[in-house]
Image (cartoon, rainbow, N blue to C red; front, side, top):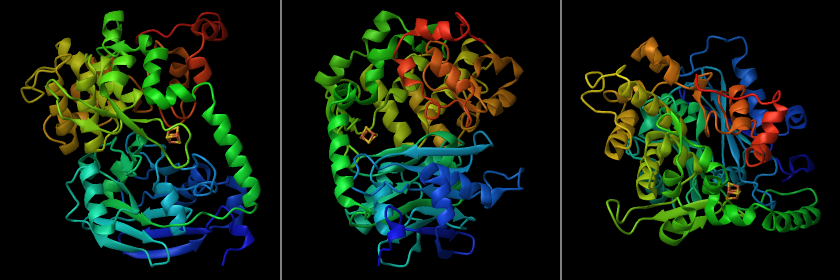
Length: 488
Ligand code: SF4
C-alpha cells in the first residue's frame, strides 16, 4: 500500500552484487530524500558513502559502484520528466563521473518500483539484470547478447521480453572497455548516457543490460494540482521561443545558431561559408528528415530520424542525430555532407561510444599525422587523412574492438599523448581528460564553462545557453574587456 511518504518516490533502492549474485531491496532513507531530492544529487551522495576513504579506487575494479538514479518527478504525469543519471568513478577522467539521458527507461524503472539501482562487484560471465514490477529481480545469462550492437541488443531483448520492456544496454565499445563507451537506452525514443564512460563501467562488470518492465503512474500527493501544473507547463513549453525550432530540427538547430563558429580539421581553422552551406538545415528537412521521436509527454520531441535515398549511403536510416555528431564527426574531421555524417553517427551509436570524445581523439591523431608526428607505421598502415570517411568508419570499429591503432584511440587524450609522444601534446584538447564539446575557441562562454567543468570539459553542467546563442561581444566585454581564447 502506498504511504503518504512514498508519493513521487517508490522508497526503494535495488542493490545488486554481481560478484556474489546477491540482490537486495533496501529502503531509501527519509533524510536522503529530504536533503538531496533525487536523481543526480542523491546518486552523488550514495556514491560518496560507498567510496569515501578510497581515493585510489580503480574505476575498472569491482569496487567501483555504478549507480542509476531516477528522481521523484519521473513517472508522474509531469511532462518531459523522463531523465535519469548514471554515476560512478569515471574511467576517462579518474574523478567523479556521471551522465544523464532521456527516453523511457527511467519511467519504466520507477513504474517497476525503484528510485535507484546500485550495481557492485563483477560477474565472471555476461549477465543482464531483469527488473519486473511485482516480481523478484533476477540476473539472467547474457552470453547470447554479448557482441551485439546497441540496437541489435534491444531487438533481441524485445524478442525475449516483449514490446513493453525498456533496456539500458552497452555495445561492443562498453564490452571492450573503451574509456568513453556510453549507455544506450529506450526504444520508442533512444537516449544516451554519453559522457564520462559509464558504459565502460558496465562492461567492466560484464553487465550487458538492465531490462525493466513496469506499468502505471507514480502516485502524486495532490494529483489534481499536479495535473493542472502539468497542463500549464505543457502549454508554456509548447509555445516557448525555441520549441518550434527544436521540434523541427532537434539540436541540429545549433548549426544555424553557432554552426559558423565550428572548427575544422582539429580546430586548425574556422568553417568556411561554403563548408557550412553543405549542412543546410532546409536540405535536412526536405531531403533527409524521416520523422522524430519524443520522450514521454514531451511537447517538443527533439530527437530526429533520418533517411538517405540516394548516393553512397542509399537505403540507410537511423533515429538519433545530434549537434554533437555534426561537430565531432563532421567539420572537425573534414567531413562536409549530411549522408556521410549520418552514416558515421549511426556507427558510433551502434558501437555505443561518445562521439564527442571519439571525434577529438581521432582529430588529434589526424593532426599529428598531418604534421609527421605520427606515421602510418604507428597506425597499422592506415593514412589518417582529413575527410576520409572510410578511414573514420574503420577507426570507429577499431576503437570499439580495441584493435590496432584503435586501442590507442580508445584511451583519454592524456594517455594518447603518453603513447604517441610529447610532440603530440599541443594538438590534444581536454579538461581533466574529457574533450571539449562545441568549439573550444569560437564559442567563448562554452569554452569557459568547459575549462572549469567539475567532471571535465562538459556541455551539460555549466551550459551558458543564453550567452551561447546570444552576443559574443557582450561575453567578451564581461570577460575582462575582450579576453580571447586562443589556440594552445
Ligand atoms: S526536449 Fe527532447 S530530450 Fe527533452 S524531454 Fe523532449 S524529447 Fe526528451
